[in-house]
Length: 89
Image (cartoon, one colour):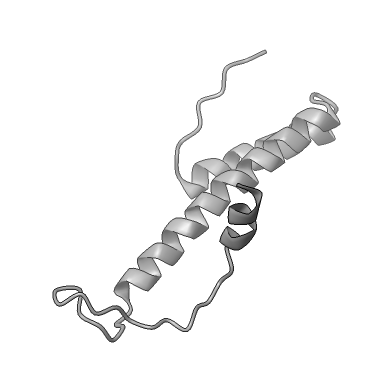
């Protein structure tokens, strides 16, 4: 198995994926190897999306002032399932 060093940029990931696609199409790697690469790259991209969303939200202006402790109402009310966890405990 050859060692692969990925340039840690979106271009590096794109290059890796296209190289893997070529390897798969040429019969040099298995379906399992191609799927593993695809899943791992998807996981990496999810972290990139999360970072971008965090940056986008941090640049938005929300009412509220962190200095006086007031918090902006973002209109989010996401149930994280805490009640069901308490019932189990």
